[in-house]
Image (cartoon, rainbow, N blue to C red):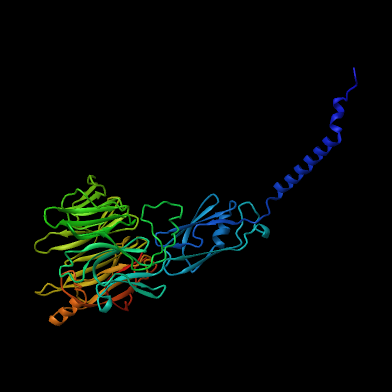
Length: 515
């Protein structure tokens, strides 16, 4: 038999020896790295608001890091300018920063983080500290729309962009606008209008949309890869009008736009058969269809955009926005729903106290947990109520009856703290019937109008007609009206501080902030 190498010598071949030496060297290097740790500095992989335009609905941003971080080192070194107070929370390598209040509109912000370290590094090791990271974002333009009352603006919608310092008439001369509501992106308005030459324009109104020209950049809560059921839109020029609903067969009355901008609800009456009346729904660009409901009055679409609060009989019905849907709930105490909190957790509703000797109205806070809290009672009227974005205060327009034989109501702008139910009278307003207010989406101010002259004689009546027959809620012709701004600031107890209103150099009615 031929001689063969023994097994005891096979490990000493040169190639085998080299392999074992490499294995030992690599194992030693890996061991040293494990003992000393990774010396590369951590970094931010994603900032959800980077180069984004955010709105009041954007309550928080996320930072995603390349490795688990030491929480305190991040929180202590994070800077946002201008300052945006908020709270942090963590989930693995991701940190969420939730704002205490919406970011003020019309501002540019810068986020900086430097010196933060990962969870496993030593505090004195400078090589493991984050290098400077800088991110930018901005908020939407501070802008509002109002109904003009004089000159070329009379009866037309006018956009006032305070951030860009621009003013633009949006609707054409041949239309007299009656009511309007902004879409959630602020890029369009839904409005009702009649022909300027029609003496019965109020009864013959049609419903349109018009573009505002506001730049459409994706909000931080609406990533660009999401599919939307809204009609395709671009950064259109302002003043592009499209017909939504005609009046050939039905007369159009009150309307509302859902918070998601995808549903329009319209109250309609058959021109030839007044018994044929009710509410209709326009959804996703489909033809309008009637909703089968019991007869009702005022209505308001809920924040979820799937249900409707509508006064029916002796109470408030909650109805699904479906052609054959069954009533979801009924609140027998209340006759009017004024507004909802932005998250749908609460509503401001009016109760009619039917005492023949002393009829009054009460404002209630009604929550989705079944709480019904009376906030105020008045012998006058409750015209409007809006929740601030943090749901800490409710701002209201209310009236009280003045002593005397003539029935005269004096309006007030008030704030009610929802935790304590304490009321602050912010402003006593001139006596007038047609007054409206609009709370800014960032909660920092209120717009309201003041009718300067209502037509009292033939000359004023002629002037009002020349201005497009602009009329108040009680049908009187309006000669002119001025817009005012009331700035809002809170004390440490979240109570609104009374201050002086600012007169705007604008003549108009029914101002509404863009979202």
